[in-house]
Length: 80
Image: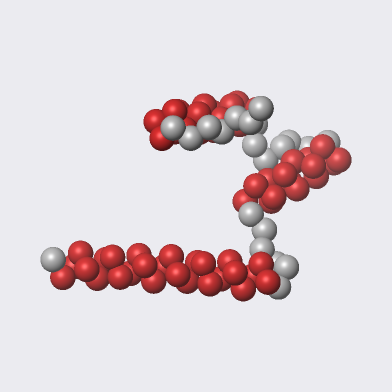
């Protein structure tokens, strides 16, 4: 029981530390999401005619998994 309480406290601390870090970095204009980084890398690969960071097949798999999650949680990922 004590180990579970300590584990919960540790997880809570980690979440608050991430929130504080993201807030601080956003206020300083230094916060970038993973999506932004991947999009920037994709544009660089197009400009430089190099291999993109994510293949089309990997992208399709991500969409498939997200659709499956959304279907199970009643969340709509498609707009329109």
